[in-house]
Length: 322
Length: 258
Image (cartoon, rainbow over all chains, first blue to last red):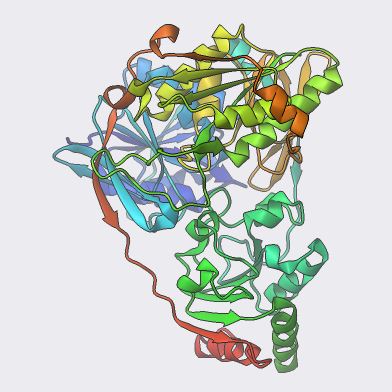
């Protein structure tokens, strides 16, 4: 088929378009000359950046006033489609707002969804999405067999964001219709966890700890090492579930996707869940006492040893250099 | 307070997964177990009903082959009864069909004040079913709940966000998805396991619930190719002799990172 009209579920934070949004727009403009960014919020501050990355039109809802995005934004999108502007494909980011919205919209439009994708192509058979399974060892290509709009969500860093020479897009204000009983949930307070240093998904070096640390107090080894390397501390799902560190530290399928220059996995065995989020790192160093740990299968440098011995020595060695 | 928990019975994650050569679907033969992600939802439901002092926890699940062993685990933990939608025609169903089937099963049980699901299954992880169920049932929903309490007719949830968490208030009835670690799931007691064998567990077909189309025909998607991803090769692996930290220093030096 030919994709004539493609939309991107676009997001901004602090008046800046998210990197994930720009990644999706860059891919979208390679598939169609007509690219629309749908923004659940106010788009004026970053409209130029959306245009530069390929958006030729922007729909923006304005402030959601505490409404949860999934139900509100799917209703707004449905209303635009019913009004006559029906896209062939809508690209969503694989994150909270993207997931909730694609799910609600799938029911409203009675369309299937493909999630966790890493690529999309327009073939003679139809629109094809690529999804990694089994920790990324196998790639599955799936074609949409029904009518559009085709709903696809993508893992972060699936594409590289590159600006082009696009002009300022037209901004069209759209409203959120009355949500009835479904609009019964409201955000009454927002809490932001304070972090210092580089962001986990943007840091050049990531140091992650897992169950092998033994107890929550030992996570300070990870933080110390990350700080010395001007990197970000991360974690496996196991120690997030155990409550040792907040969810925002989690690397993996249900956490952040990271692709740093160096990823240091300390006391992490390498569950599929975790590997999906870090195997794109340029270099991987693993320290684990179990020589059978799957993490050694993808590590450029693997050290079979006790992290409680290796990490303190490494920290001392790095301190003595600075 | 009547709560329905949606659970999935999956192949044991400890054994390696495989795709069926002809259909490319995840192989689900052999014994299925309760998805560990769902144990948190069952525990949360049992605690909320206990706090409310009245009501019961019921379980719904969908499977192509009549499998109930994972549901029995949930009953052994303390759920009152189960409803399984089992139908060979459901094999190959997408998330949307799954949500329609589970929503119909919840309705058949007489609805609920609260529906709980995990944020995503451990085997397929499409991650949309809870929100799709809410939309099918016309209910509000709060996904990624990491703390849940009920005050009167108001649900109060701490919902995970990219940068921390949001406090969300929601009217009932509602649907929530809970993260792993939200509560510590109990182990079924011996008495619980024995009692579970006698608890009602009805099995119905998709047709009984008037949900069509199902399976491959209803999926709206078809796998056209399966390839091996470019494998990442293992590098040097050494045993720590007390000096292995030096290898890491050299590795970082060579990359000009220190």
